[in-house]
Image (tube, rainbow, N blue to C red; front, side, top):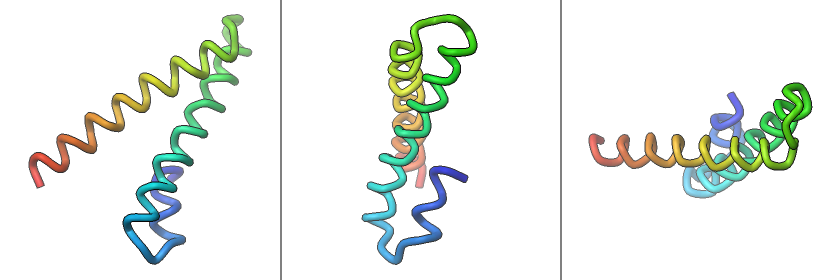
Length: 69
């Protein structure tokens, strides 16, 4: 629901895309930070790793969707 929320709240798809990316990256950072706290690893490093891996996965999915759509 986090990546889709801006599309439900905004009229412009272009601005919703920008907000979706920002909100998703923020959510990934928060979840990664919390994961780091629970697993005993450094929370900031865990948050950054989660943002990078999740961002790459989301970017790849977006590019594949553009390629096949």
